[in-house]
Length: 371
Image 1 (cartoon, rainbow, N blue to C red):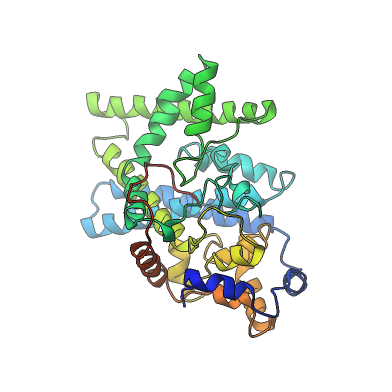
Image 2 (image 1 turned 60 degrees about the vertical axis):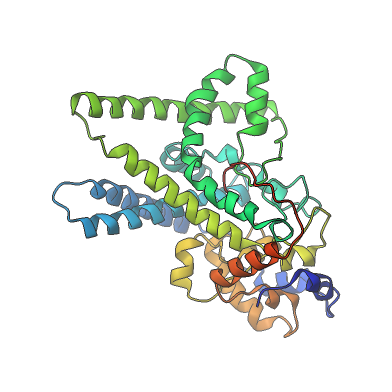
């Protein structure tokens, strides 16, 4: 059942307290990423997604099958994109080649190179979570429902903003240092807080950013040439329906991710520092209907409370780790309160809390959704 804001303090005073050491002793064997699982999952998902994407506009295919292909390609592209979340928590020395291949096949073509998610680590710093230092948090339970509507509506503009960011702003950053700094602070992060300012990068990080930006820019140039040839001369594979198809796919993916993000937390904090248990209780677990839930919260993200307890746990181990925690933790463990019956219940509870709040009625500006 959803937790009301007034019950958070009571939950954190509950005895016995949540023991991180006890939880780790239960799931201590689940912290090693298995490389072949990452490669197989990603490459199979990516290959099927690309094939299905092409079949949507393929000749001789009836409309019902085009719709099926669209859903398959979009959901699998969404799954592939969310591997960026894993990359942020896998130690840099592990899965190096996977990191490069993901950027080449997914990060750059989808215009979400891994550098845009470097700020995710602040979401997991205990002193930053839910504060102004956390770009992935808004106190939505304490603000007008229009903030939820505004956050959800941004899905229609984010695909266009991504093209502007890497197709127009990127070359401008090569000409002007002030422009470079502004773009980095305001337009280079997958966050939800429109007031968040990203810290300027180190020289080493800036080199990585420049290479990934260049890849995105060149991809846009090549695709633009292909689209122009398809529209002007009727040659090539990028016909007149490619742009609407690509835009619809982008909107679908960002919309699903926005729904998942809204259901990932209870958004009860209002700016102050939260205790570890408060942060855990502010996160949500969906352990029912794994096949359906895995479509909108893939790559382990349906176990979001577990992820906030153990951020370095690989996604493929989370289902079994959660099962063991539910089996072996005390019956009154606060961890059990993170479990929700459905995404609909959480979204409905969030809406009710927002309607009952006395927060601002100002709608937020558009910003990319985070995993």
